[in-house]
Length: 94
Image (tube, rainbow, N blue to C red):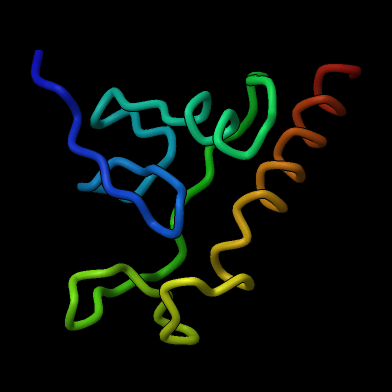
């Protein structure tokens, strides 16, 4: 089996074809790598999908909403991980 092609969007890794952190089509799961980058221990949580993005003239991904490759509103990965971790912990307590 070949290695899954990935893409980095503002320090977060996704499968390059579908822009998903967890992609069943590509058999890719980047949660552990992304969690570790932001200082979290890995726990089972929902994957994060990239927002609508495009590439600028330099080939760098940027959010379509604000046209910024470092947009904190669209690419607030640490906040999104924290929310997903909280939801996973709450779901585990039920």
